Image (cartoon, rainbow, N blue to C red; front, side):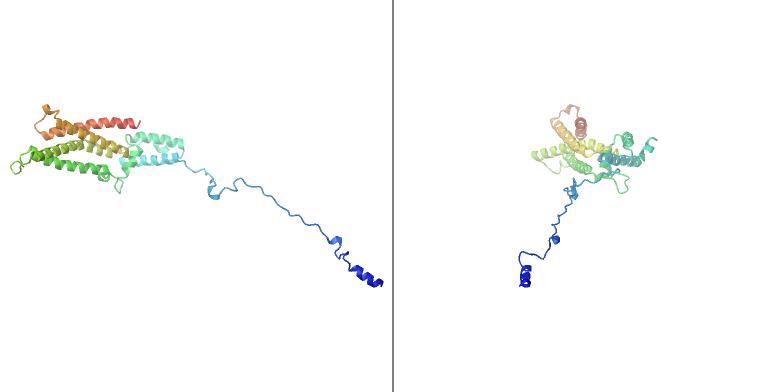
Length: 272
């Protein structure tokens, strides 16, 4: 009986095969905290790139570009440069480049780096000379001059000469229209005779810029309109020379000269 009792006792729910020594406490999870970087949440694309010591500012780039433009201009024109300019050409120091810039600017006067750059667009493939008809303003001047010569010649033949008198009879309206075309053509031809040489001179001296083109058109318009009014009103009739065409042409040239002075002053004020 004792043996059976012992077996039942060993199978009891109050006993466990697992000894207390086999029970181990639960292991704690070890968390390693890493410090958060300040720019960890900045996208890669927006992170500023490191600035190298060789980076140039926009001002330095502009200075170097205009210095090169002025040096090329002096070479093309064959201008003699001061001996002080030579040592400054190779320097990379900004203060020396500014001194070189001012010296070259005085050497190319009245041209400017801006005007030289504008004219260089219209040079030939060898960069030796400027092709005048590549400039849009010069082409327009040429067209206006040719049309003015044609209408002036036609008006002179009808009104001043006797070429068509025996062959054709014009009504009063036709004669008036032809006379007005003759006066307008003469006025524009006279202003072109003044402004076309001025344009050629500015191109040769590399002083023409895009900002001067509107003033050309304003001066031509004012000079031509003034000449048309003066010719029609016959203000200078007492001083009329024998040839009416030359008289009107002289008035137109004089009006172009006055308009150039007026708009030249306006242009100078605009650039102050």
